[in-house]
Image (cartoon, rainbow, N blue to C red; front, top):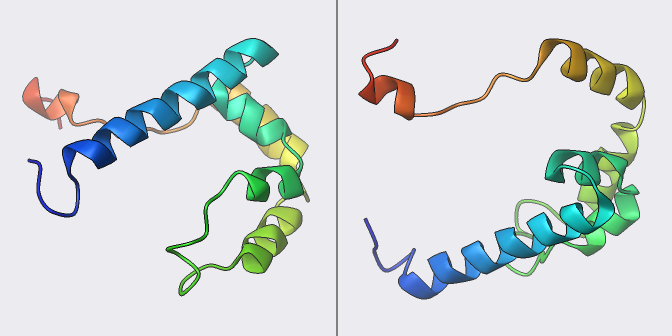
Length: 98
């Protein structure tokens, strides 16, 4: 449903932004998740528009969270590659799966 808080312009902008991330990852020869995992925390934070979220998360807070997350990152990546990552999808519900 399209409403006042998620209009056509917002959806189109999101599609373009997703395409830019996909193209960047393709240029680097990586899936998007790997592009993000390999990105330096400062670089990743520089990609975020904090304009409307600073009441919840500031640039400094985001950088601190990402820097703390560097500890054990390689081990988590190995585990994810070996075991996968649980994902959410609604398509299984349409097929009658739990």
